[in-house]
Length: 221
Ligand SMILES: *Cc1c(COP(=O)(O)O)cnc(C)c1O
Image (tube, rainbow, N blue to C red):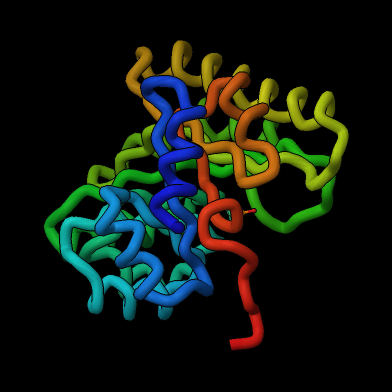
């Protein structure tokens, strides 16, 4: 079932758009099912849950951390995480750099930009993001590889609004990529179960899909 849903979704994704199967709150047995069907990228948003699944499951899984990451927990995932999606402060980048160095590796990350209308504590505002890039101190972290942006659209049925928000993220991506990165940025992480088709039309290269694959999450556990 899980693999069939993944294949259905993959059929709708243009070439170059990769699927992160968001497995948070779902048991390792379901991840294993998806894995056996060929899926290799999984997304989790809680450190402890990610670490225990990492230990239990095959080592060629690409684990993405997609939630808000607290600095004091970076050390637990630094040895194995493939991509950290929602980086929103220099403080966090500094810690990721430090822990990556200790593990003798470079950790790819995305900067989270806040384009939705909803209030949230997380993400750079577009102005903060541009100021951060202009400032240039991000270049000193040699064990962190910033490779693009991540965002979430407002949780609404208004598709025009969702499209506008993803488009704003795309414009920021392109501006930053040409102005400061020489086109080296590769990754736009946007789109979830309910809005990923819109995200794909507005520049996404990585979509993060959970409930459409695994069903509703049970938060009671
Ligand atoms: C849970 C989560 C998703 C997946 O959401 P679905 O609606 O289940 O597809 C995507 N991105 C982030 C950051 C999440 O926390």
